[in-house]
Image 1 (cartoon, rainbow, N blue to C red):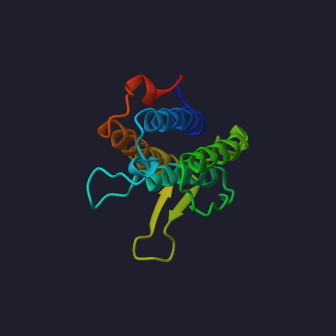
Image 2 (cartoon, rainbow, N blue to C red):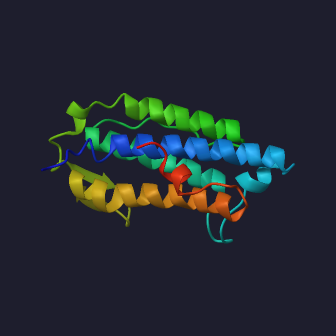
Length: 169
C-alpha cells in the first residue's frame, strides 16, 4: 500500500499544530496558576545557543505552511513573526492551520518529482524532489521545532506528557 504525499504532510502538520496549540494553552494556564510571568516561559530556551520558545513556535508554523505550499507549487503566505504573547502564538497557529487547510490534496498528490529548491541563490542552496524534501528535510525540521517547544515547557515545569505532544490522531 502506498501513501500519498498529501497524507504524509498536511494532516500531520494539522495534528501536531493543534497539539502544539493545546500545549501552549496548558503553559499559559500553568503560568497563571503558579503566578509565573508569561515571558519566563515565552523567552525560555533549553541552552543559550538555542532559540527561545517564541521562535521555536514561529519556525514550526513556518515549516508547516512553507512545506505545504512548496509541495503544492504555490507561494506560502508571509507572516511577520512579531508574536510576543501566548495569544499571539495561538493566532499564528490558527492562521497557519487556516492556510494549510486551504491546500487541497489535488495540488500535492502526484507531485513527488516536483523540484523544490531551498535557500535559492545562496551558498546553502539545496535541490530536492518533493518526496525527499518532505520526508528528509521538511518533516524532520518541523518535528525538531515542535519537540523543542514541548521540551522547553516540560523542562520549565509545565505538566504535559506524550499524549499532549501527540494530540488527537
